Image 1: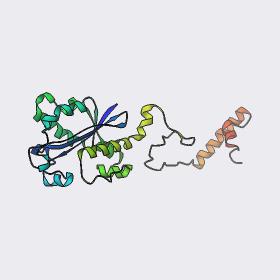
Image 2: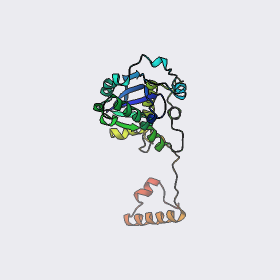
Image 3: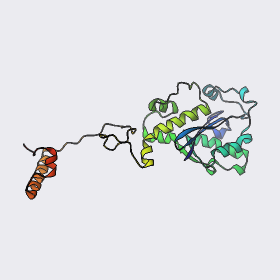
Image 4: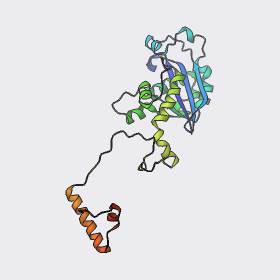
Length: 240
């Protein structure tokens, strides 16, 4: 299966206000392995970057003046993502900006959904960790993915981190997808890498249930003329 972890950086938060993409970073995964195949470009947005976005990304307006416009890279970009599953954190944000850029480039390019399917890891994280912070930094800390080198947001760096976060979040699904589980003799059939989100609840039989169980074993003993298998396994009769 071909997947692509993707991230964009933009001039601001609102695509409806004419904000544009200034960076696209994407890394390819094949059969759940990160490959060396990637796509990365800075873009000239033909407008200034909001102060808040500049503080988050560290990208200055002057740096982008000699960079290509989106329409100049649209074809290699679409060729890179064609037919893949895009892994995006807060997908509605990135896809909204990408669709707007595709519309500016020309109607022949359609929308992102015409070229690839999309998996939103933010929705996945909220389902798995309800009520907790689920931004990329929080997920890196929770899942043990090192982001010590992430001082600023960056398209390619964040795509690489997102790929690792996605693989960590879905590691418990590998055995199910491959049709087997990694078991130890006392694992009870639970995959080694599946985290327990809460301590299992232990239920104990009541006195009445124990008495009914003992009576049932007595009936089995009587019909068989000897101790039933259950009691032989226990090594003793109930009440002794």
